[in-house]
Structures are given as C-alpha cells and as structure tokens.
Picture 1: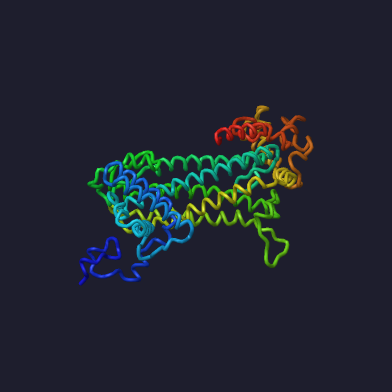
Picture 2: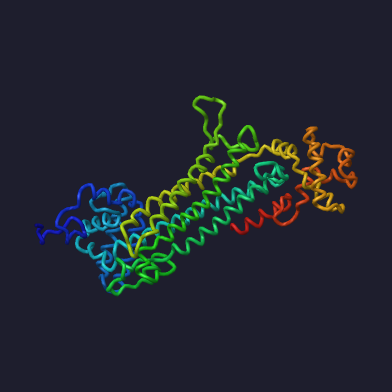
Length: 464
C-alpha cells in the first residue's frame, strides 16, 4: 500500500501502486537525446506563463518568479551544471522539477492549461524553425560559392556527358549552374516547409484543449508563430512537418550526392578535371601518393542515412491512431540526426566549392577526343538543306572514319569530310571547333559563355 499523503516521485504517479521498473524507466526515457530542446522548452514555457498571467490564471508576481526561475535554469544548463535525471524521463519534466526546486510551489503552476503532448509538439517546431533558418543560411552560402565559381569558369570548355559518354561540349560554368539550379529548388522547398512548421500547437493540451481561459493567439505571437493550429487532436499528433523536412533533406542530400559523384570522378587520375584543396582531402596509411576526396565521398555516403530517416518517420506515423502515442518519442532522433547531417554536409560544401580549381587543358582535351562536335556537323548539314536523318547518317559515317584513323572531326581534311557529303564546304571548320560549338548555343539556358554570365547574374538577384 502506498501512503496517500506522500507525493510520488513521478509527476504523474498518483494513481500507481508501485514504482516504474528500473529497466523500463531507462527504456522509455528520452532525456538522453531530447535535452537539446532545452532552450526551446524554456522559451515556450516563458511565453505560456506570460499568457497565463495575461488571462488571470497566474498573478504578475507568479509570472515573474517563473520567468526568473526558468532563466536561472537555462543558465545552469548552459554552464553544464544542470542535474539531468533519467527518472524524470524527458527535458520537460527535468526543467519543471528544477524550476520547482528553485522557486517552490509556484513552479508547479507553470503546467496549468497545457500537457507534455502539446508542449513537446511546440518545442520541436521551435527547434526545427531555428534549424531551418540555419540550414537556409548555409544553402545560400553554398549557392553563392557555386555562382562565383561558375562565373570564373564561364569560358572553360569541358565534355558534356550522357550515359557518362562524351556527348557535346559545354562550359564548366554551365555545368556548375546545373547544380545551382538544384540547390535553388531545394531552397524553395525548405522555405515552403517552414510555413507549415511555423504553426503553434500549444493550447491543445493532452488532446481536447483546456478548460482554462487561455489566449492561444497571444502565445503564438509571443513565440513568433504565424498562427495557432486549428484542431487539438491533430495538434498533438501531427508530425507531417518533420516528415516534410526530412523529405526536403533527402532531396537535398541526393543532389549533393550527385555532385559528390562527379567530384570524385573528376579528381581521379582517369579524368583529372579538377583539384580539391588538400584541407578537404586525406591520404592513405600505406600508399603515399594517394589524395582521397573524402568530403565528397562522405557526403555521398551520408545520403543513405538521411533517406533512411525519412523512411523511419513515415513508418513511425503510418499506423498511429489519434491522438498522441508513445511511438512519437521515436520522432526526435531521426529528425535530430537529419538536421545535424544536413548542416554538416552543407557547411563542408560551402567551404570547399569556392576553392575548387579546374584543369582547363585536361577538360578541353577530353572534349576534343570524344567527337563532341558531331551534332554540330549534323546541324550544319541541316542548315544546308539536308534532312536531319540523312545528316545523322552522314555524320555517323564520318565518326566511324575518325575512330578508325584516330582523328577528331576537326582534324579531318575537307576532302575526307566531303566523301560523305558534297554539301560540306570550307566553312564547316567554323562549327567543328569547341569554341564554335559552345558559342553557337547562345540562347536562354544554353552553354555559351555569355549565357552563363547572364544566368549567374539572374541567379544572384534571386539569391539576394
């Protein structure tokens, strides 16, 4: 039998006749990982106390005691002096218990009109909103670095690929702008996601709202939310915003992984298109000549864990009935790790990309070797009145000769080319040069250097 006059160690322990099993206590506790929410938990509690005082549930003196106590708790945590306890389960109860230790019974009034269900939902949104803003800043820094590099490399010619086979010549700047386009779409997705994150569930209480005369609009204003949520059941059980963020993150990391794959290829001896600074690479413990592109390789690998976190959260939510369930404790570690992985990957890339140097001669030679101006020859014939399918066959035969004699199209004599079509004249060599090929694509979205510079200018305006 328990003593009804003795308060339980657990804040919810009044109806229980025995203590929580020691293993279960550790198994169900989340304080080991959710303590990173302390700043947002305290911020939410200060706003909640302020609102309770405004509606007359707390006195002005009680509100002030609570706010000063919470600020003192925050300082303890930041000094590394806070006594985190597994027996108090989570960040919320640890902070509330410590507040009560400091200011007495007034601390127990803080939880009036709310539940841990709406409290944690609010904390996660506050946390994720701040992290989204930090990620957006790193994304902007990476995009700016890419644009600077693209402008510097606007005239650098390289082979463009399909199927990883030489296709047509492009400029390195144009290729870099393809990555910039991907990151711009990622930024738009992140900004759109933030709109749905920035809605406040506080006031939904456990699931049905509260009988106290709360002012949810005031609390939302104090916390910088756009508005309160509309339905109390959905408010405490919604994790769409976390899934949406992880979806954004998976797409972003997929783009960085594609970027990484090309950097890994291009730094290899077989391509030798670019050089990465030594500070972003490592060596081998046995092969002294090695310079390994570890940053791109690791970002490529980390994409898998972020994709896994997205699937984890989707699976977590797929069978949950309304409203809150303990399953939702499992939302934090995938979300936290996704945030950390994305921020780290973006920081590494934002630092590394502006320092990439191209090996223009190697790029140019690779473009020259692969018959990359074959399409230009076909276009030349079409402009002279040859049907495209016939032009395609003529150029195919010319390429076959080039393969047999190890000659690029631009290295063939006029007589050699004319054996396939007497339509070909002296002016053909104007279109068979690499410079002529890229300059000819002088339209919006094309690879011509002038278009690359114009695209960089437009992208900078959108980034500003």
